[in-house]
Length: 306
Image (cartoon, rainbow, N blue to C red; front, side, top):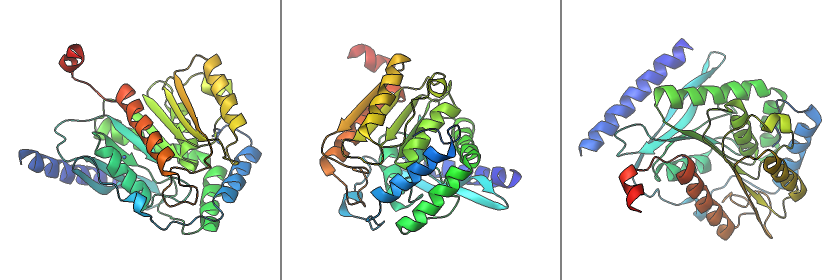
């Protein structure tokens, strides 16, 4: 980890200088569940994405609401190789802001995820998009399946990856509050992040990820949960979402579950065949409202005057 620490400190120093200069002027828990359900989810995602590709669409061209700074940043290791995530934050950041661990879809940490990180950073958050594929990127469904399967077969490695990201945000970036956000494969891992930090994560957003009804796994989680799902999703059936919601309700967990009618899996992915602009935008607005409620730090004088 000495190599990571050295590189990380150097990157943070460079970014801090840039920020100051500018100021002066974005499932089931596969580690606890039997292999078969996790592999079944890999198969389901393969079917859902069989006709998809990673080519960008005009829907990805959404500028952040305010100027941001971003850069690749090392945060963990794969053997002797550094693993880089994608860091984004508002240019006018003068003190630590609430942060979000962003977790990619089954394609990997690609341009689409980086664009979403920029967009969320423009709303006033530090965003750190992790790379659970450790530098690998899928260009077609077969490659994506293989990469997702690697994580399913060795979930402890992905858990360590997310722990490293959380440590970076809490200790190095000094974020006062931290949430998680993920789509598809990443949606499952967003729920896993809430399990990894049951007392410390402040908000969890799941976009059509595999979920759990295991009350023993869900009971320790304290983070409020926002789940955004699709009625026509054959990979994440509505019945499983409803069972998940019932479990959360029985455990008296703070949660919001929304199921979009007449849309399929990955409706918020602008590069996929199921992209549905109206539902995607509504889900994004719900995400921002959720983070504003549970992550954002509001000025007390502003709150009292409202």
